[in-house]
Image (cartoon, rainbow, N blue to C red):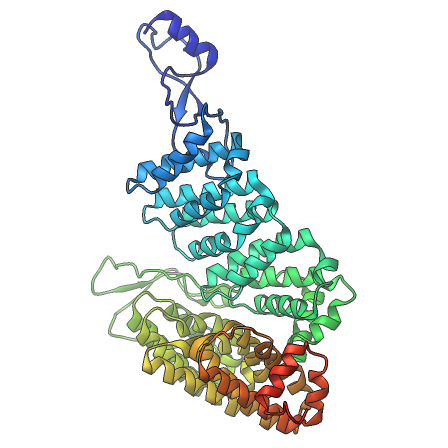
Length: 578
């Protein structure tokens, strides 16, 4: 290497290496030794060409140089992304970041195609490509800003889906890109996308991250604008936040209460909330936020620890994980023969608490046989020691509800069967977790597995037979907006039965909860389920309401849009009479 070339490297902080077809990102690097330089001499600071995606994983580009021919590089991007070679895909994603930073006007002409191609790579099986695609989306949001509004819905759906994966660095990259999205696109589009794709998701982590990013989006909009929309949009927003505030994940509950506290500053909030949630939920949430704030006393489930192998195979050593922190002290090491059992001398309350902690551990076990055993143990506790179950109903169902959505069909079916047996035993104690239970049960009504479907239907029927039908009517009415397929048909049919049984005693509840469901169906140009089955259940609901309400149904329908009124009379065969 000539001295002139070395001097050029030292002055410009560049290596003599260049890649003509790729935009270069530079990073300082110290060299240890170079030809004539000894180890005792200090070397000049030179640069290194970086072609890895790690430099922009948080949505930032340290330094980018413009391309000589950006149009050609844009074409290369599509060629490389269609390649099967992962290194070509990584190079294409890096070039997209450089185009966004230096040639945004060129990228804007093909922004839809580029966004779609990058979004596809988010689900790439190679984690390096997937993370690079996620980071590239963050760069696009940061540089293109509101030009990305049209892509928000699909990108949000894909990124939130990645949140459900256990890979931590993928979660971190997706969370960062969503954070950039919320900060740069139109806030209303971000709120709508997060509510649609995340807050109703079955995966608890997806709901948690959706709530986390929904909070800053709502803060950008403000309570006044959020509560100035249509009645339907306000009701949907309030219902979503109430559900998040009652979620089975502690962080999700925190974000839900935080967002509700933002809306509570507006004078119209109480009126909106009154028509969106049951009175018991309204009172509970409002009092909790006013008295305790949005923070929640941590009651995390105990961590799952593997049993340590004893040093002596004939003895078992019990460490200081006994309830000594509850006021009782035992020795730091107690050696017990495995075949003998120490008689318990703990007070009854502490012993019951210990049983619940063991139950939480078993419900989270990795082996499906252990989870099935835990579900049966929960039923046994409901029969033998119902008081601690009722007193800790939220914590118990935080651990139990995931089993109603377990990936293993045997566990899921057994959990649903046990739930049907628990409902008559617990009855009104289930009110704080009723919405969680109804959501899990109704989701399983779409199962193709005959045993799971039958168990879910049994759980729904037991709920109607033993729980407060007013609260159940409200929960089922809310679920209609998020169901499809067989679940939507079954829930709508049961709503018709609840209308008939409830209206003589609580007509206002029926008008408040069941009528909006009917207007929801009649106002749709395309129903979530095709065919005659959905028409049959909607007709049955309309006829049930008409038989109970009579002329007052006409008065309520008069306030609806003309096409809704026309569809109502058509269903009831009242077009000629009207």
